[in-house]
Figure (cartoon, rainbow, N blue to C red):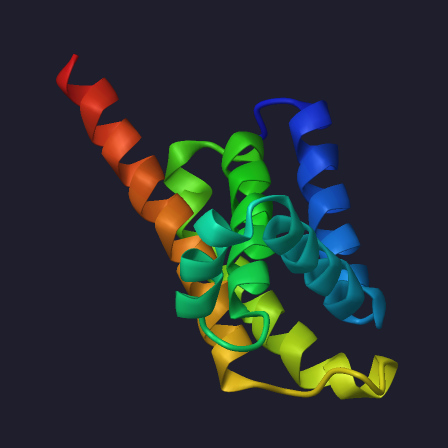
Length: 137
């Protein structure tokens, strides 16, 4: 079932770390610092991209939960992947619902949940494409 204990441990660490990040006040400040840095390096190039991004941090949610989905993908075999991604999205719903209990700076937002879903969905689609390519070889 599990490919390797290291992959399994990596997936667990990724999910726990991301959960802790989402339940802390640091996620917003870190993401704001990254965006400010990108604007300070080359504002003419970064300005257009950053102005067209959605408000809030839904893109951060897509990035971190997509990364968790990659870790889960490495930990599990192909047959368990769809169920694992559904379970991971279910966990992100729980994390989003519980978020205000752990931090005063964050609140429940549908856009964050959409970001979670899109991050996991992109990884799932890529995994399915890889699976199809491997089957045809």
